Image 1: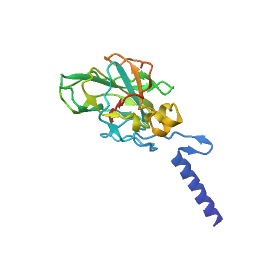
Image 2: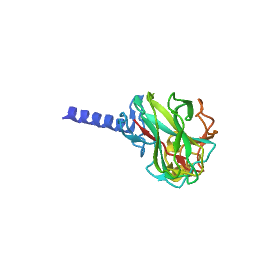
Image 3: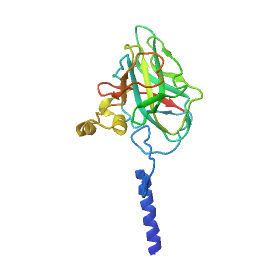
Image 4: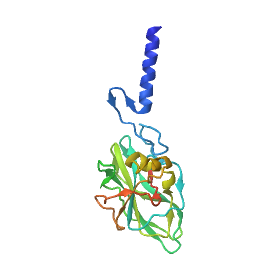
Length: 226
């Protein structure tokens, strides 16, 4: 009876440690899912869409990005995965004319910020028709990500369209990757939805510019399909 109880207790401790992302005597990787802060360690499902890591399900349809800026949000890859496309969702089309955007993936520079552009992830300029809304995709080929932390990047050439964006007032993305400026910001979940840096529109740079927490506007939400 004592042996059974001891084994049961040991199993319970191991299970609790596994759920918390820790094992006694060593540290283990406990990746955060692309939604809601859940811990996962499973591969992504081919044919399905995923959003930035740690982002809550609340998306702002009123926040618009500004031109001349590169936006980036964190994305964790638990196992080697081939990316099929990167997409945005247009909520309000540009009534004046067609417009363009570019998306891509950056590796992490080891300091919780975008580093080098992943080869092939900027598949070129995407044209969005005048007044068009809904999903707009950049199709990728031969882009396989090794396990690790990456950054989903976005830039565009217009202020006349609005796209789905992570609302800083309800975002968890900045808190998990880049920390927070104060406890009050952390409690209010207003730490920022990803990063923002100065960058003229065009092909995404091979090395990301200096970026800081985007706390004054929504961050464009990029959808990843595997």
